[in-house]
Picture: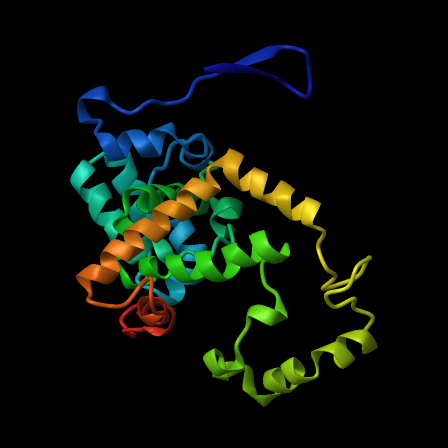
Length: 257
């Protein structure tokens, strides 16, 4: 419990976090409820379904935020584990449309973030096709942040892996220095400007943030569980990119409605 001051007056309002029923609590329920974000995400869901109605992902994927909120509120350990091992929690696009419509102030999108974190910590993400893609996101976007200071940088994008970009993207890559200079960017150079070189001291600071917040530990967890899954699937992991390419490109086409 904690106290907050009202903006309209100096009186204090007592805020008490709802706690799960102790007799139903298990490891996964504890992990979900102990994440501070949970208490902002799920206060008192009445399963009205407004979040599902407004959700863009629910229009295309086999995904209903309402059902996820219901599973968590029931505190059934087996159902929560099944959810963490499923494709479902990876369909959310984090647009937070659900937050704008919920009549009780719940944020299913944030709840999804909590569930994803638990799935990654427990290794359950590797049991689903979309979950296994966490390795690709970690190695591409995560490493780019740490090594370049950018989430996405032209140097890490391979036109051969993204044919949907068309021939224009390949042409851009071939002429990147000339083109970026024409539009005022500062490609891989010191100083200000888009695509500028990020100083090492700033990269070191980013790494410290990852260490302090637990992101570095989570990265190690993703690598470790992915390696185990690669061995189960008889795919190369350390000496080749076989498993990485599998999770990056594999699509069973069994996710949409």
